[in-house]
Length: 419
Length: 162
Image 1 (spheres, each protein chain N blue to C red):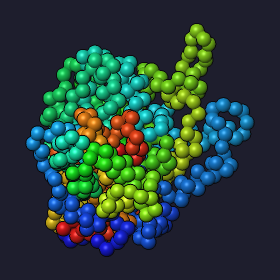
Image 2: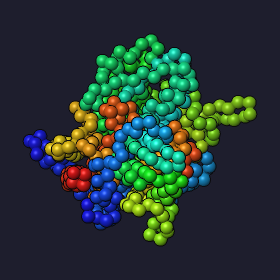
Image 3: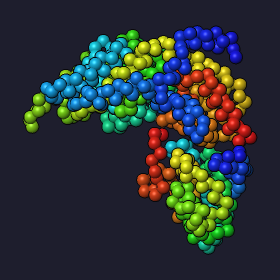
């Protein structure tokens, strides 16, 4: 164990009582076929603490009605709780105003909203959209659909062998036709933390709006949308210890106001006749129909939970896990880590000599260790490294060093089977 | 590996390490490419039909151990058989992997291929075992390409977020 890690452990231990935190997560007590669950697939979806489960239960048992509709008490309670959740989320990412936060079904819908609402209105033939090699398919496909519809062009920022974006190349992609930038804050496949603040500043100096896909960043670090100065920031609830089916699109108010609605229906209108419909103000303009009220309130409880622990403390804890896991895997012969950026979130993609990632995943599962295997919905990243797939261990603040040891023991088992 | 429930039995590991009938087949009369876009597995199957008989068969590609061992054992088992016999085995293998026949009770022609019966308990791995058979079926019917994701694929079953 390195001196660096040795120095880190007491610090994170002082800030953090992992066992007390683990006690909040009922699912972590699960045993699968006699083995304790070692859940290392947090980049795909995180687990939910009892506090959030209880909040969902309380809403559903004593507060549920439709929102923004009726004058009866329950509807007023539900509306107040839903809007309180929006306030909590606005504080969580330090938005200027809570109306800048739109509830969506998740990051994918948030990006699609930006594409339909902004892209289809303001991006036209011959215009260029800059994306990066590190994007998840959900920040590629919507823009391809737009490019196809409008005759626009996608330009792609390349990466180096460590999985870091090449900033010189990024800057060279800009020209007078550049109309939009879509950029992941943290790569889901490799864990690279991108220098988004610097990249946003470069784009904004040229009048180009930037959407940041924060699905992998919001759960693991403090996000400040005003400090980043991004135009849009998208993230999901279920990676943040919240429920599935809820996510956020943050957008600057002035931009959201200029955008066209994404979905038509109730709640997004002020008045409707068959001749003319007048749209509601933001954020309601983008929230047609009955939203996932319970999930939104659950997400509000989740960010309360995370904020009580502290996002900075969470980042330190997870960094300790990443460093330890990286060192352990580097010591294993026949194991190669894919993605070695200097600045990384707690995602560890790796391949084993002579063993396909799917076999790794199945065998680790037999030891109770849950990792993700495949292309991680980031096929351009896999193509860049000439790999069909990787195995990916992704850590949350409730993981332990002992669980990293279980991963390492599991990998040794895989190697014994295939030796 | 001692656990009998494990899919990774010695026979499968052996075929993965030393795949039989691996490589190109000169002057194949029938061939097809198969791929599983969800995991990146792809392989090609080439064969020579003499009359109705599979006189020669070979496969190659990049895949997981389950897929490679399945392909290796498949080629060893269908070589010398008729097209009709191969189609019967394709159907039986598919039924076994998806849990549609009970190999302990119902008659079949699968022999040692029953080592793959365990994939029925691993829904995400069923396609790995089936892909070579699917590709063989395509080759026998000379369709140029097959995929575990084609829309009219009877084996298609959603396996969740890719």
